[in-house]
Length: 68
Image (cartoon, rainbow, N blue to C red):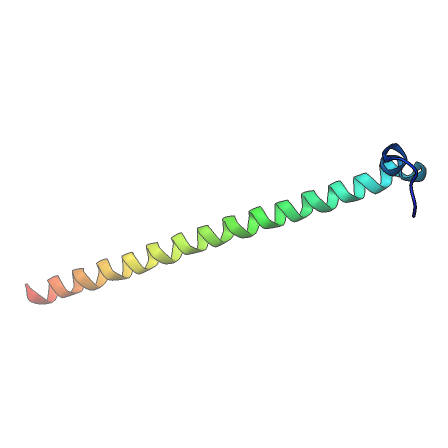
């Protein structure tokens, strides 16, 4: 589609509300997806780190128990 001016481009031939809303919803959806993915990844990494530390504490306690 060819536009004569920048105003015509932003008006999108009378369909600007639909077009820009679709772009906005798509961009917002992608940002939410990115945020959730990063958040879940960090949460999972912290959970794994805590589980490993807990297992190490359990092994150390068992080792100490066996020496008494």
